[in-house]
Image (cartoon, rainbow, N blue to C red):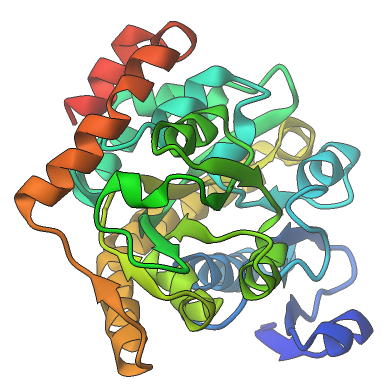
Length: 329
């Protein structure tokens, strides 16, 4: 039985990253799983490795999954194209990346749409949430599940207590029109940027701040090059665990059913563990002497009031019924 192992490739050596791969056997279907996250404790890293291990154990002789983390195979600007070309078979990009394929995915980016991760998970299990998994079928993409990473918080090179504190600043965002509008509502300037470039941009002052989960802020060491993080809890970061329709259709019915079952079980288990991982990484930031600004109810309400108009701005594109389903989860 093969085991998932870690080794340093030539590329990984040049950027101090590790590539996880399996010792695939002749005749097995090889599926490359590429993602942009590094470290060992991030929820996406754990979920990706658990998925690979289960496939490699339970589908031994049929399928073999190789995991390429930390942009060692493809960065987040190239991975979707690579999936369509068949150069990679499995991805887990942020949901914010799919606005150009379907504006409906913007529902996940709406500020304060979800009270917490439990509400987000309930939405993904609803008919509306499940329906979005097949929203890009005509493009050639199919969702396998949603991997939660946590709620987002703002960090900056000065304390952010009120939204007005961000006026005139530059914030790194993902390529999401909703996220851009949210930053503009604060009087700040959105700067779309690849995830791998964020630390250097913060360090050199190309951008003044960013928004992310505790796990990303800690594992990518963003807190080291920022004044502080503000506990806004304003937005969800989740990933679309996905493959291509071409790859899925290439599997025999038996292999496809087993593959999809493992994908669903790994997704459910991973999402149940995220809250503990986020709490641990918040504590890790404080232990590493990072600073966290907390907000009282009145201060947080100012953030809500500032960003809530973004909902109306995108209601026509996302759909009022979809927004209602997400907000009511």
